[in-house]
Amino acid sequence: MIRLYTGARSGNSHKIALFLSVLGVPHETVEIPYGPELRTPEFLAKNPRGQVPVLEADGKCIWDSMAILVYIARAHGGEKWLPLDPAGMAEVMQWLALAENELLFGIAQARIMLRYRGPEDELVFLDMKRARFLIQRGLTAMERRLASHEWLALGRPTIAEMACYTYPALNAEAEIDMTPYPAIRAWMDRVRALPGFIPMIGT
Ligand SMILES: N[C@@H](CCC(=O)N[C@@H](CS)C(=O)NCC(=O)O)C(=O)O
Image (cartoon, rainbow, N blue to C red; front, side, top):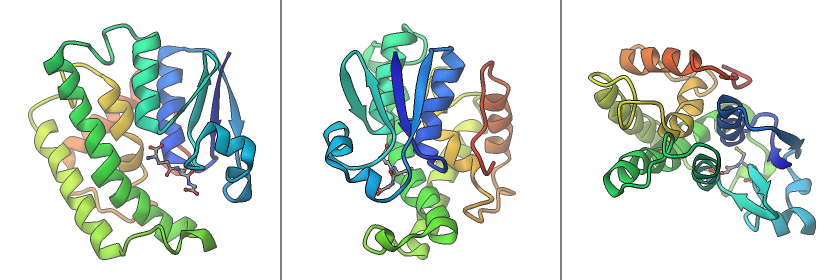
């Protein structure tokens, strides 16, 4: 049985729960509270970074939401969600890079600074001005693509959608005005209409 270690308010964990649900992959979920439980020797043996999400499958632990999406796509999705041809794979992966850079260091960090900042977060988080700059750059790149395409890559839903949906959907918690991004708003509706879609708390 696949096991997903997750956090209740973790956007990165939602990406994985969403993809497993869309693919209909049976799994169990273990919720780890933020704080010391992420730093126990048992959990650090699963993820040396001490973060959720972690996926336990085939006797291995895979950490980082992008690596986990790649694993699930190839293990359970055939060619559909992440093809192996060089150009197709690269087209999908460039959006995973945007998810891990502009969206994570922009939207995810603004959300934490505004809503969920804890004592451990002092050293980790950037200033709000920089987060706002990254948000604008990341969302503008998505808007440019989606203004003339239904999906981020390959003309169909791929793990680019799974990687890039959750944080823009948390725009209210990050106090982002989505008015300049109509194509992203329409794309989020298309993602929500995918069979098996499950929402993130706070969206
Ligand atoms: N790049 C990582 C980021 C993971 C991450 O930031 N996880 C958060 C929850 S969304 C976490 O565990 N935070 C607790 C900590 O860093 O101590 C990924 O995509 O999985």
